[in-house]
Length: 104
Image 1 (cartoon, rainbow, N blue to C red):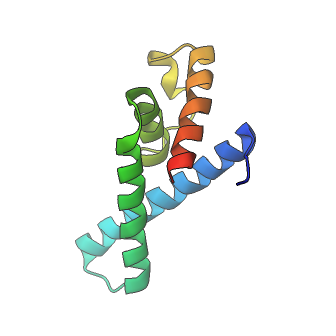
Image 2: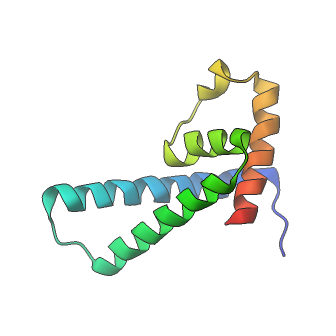
């Protein structure tokens, strides 16, 4: 099993977040517009979203909070300042990313 560094974990989480958000948008548009989309793409998107949501639910509360904010809600920047000091946030984020990726 390959061990990822913190920067690699961050990049994987960012990529997954974008994909998750794009599929959320695609599925919302599919239902709203009743447009014809590639059914295979829709099935994949539904499975991806369900899998990510299920994995998030297995995490402890701190990890779940950070992953929900950054992956499912797409929060960037200094969103965490109302909840954590910078050092606490980065420490919790490293742990949350690792736990999340291990469960995927």
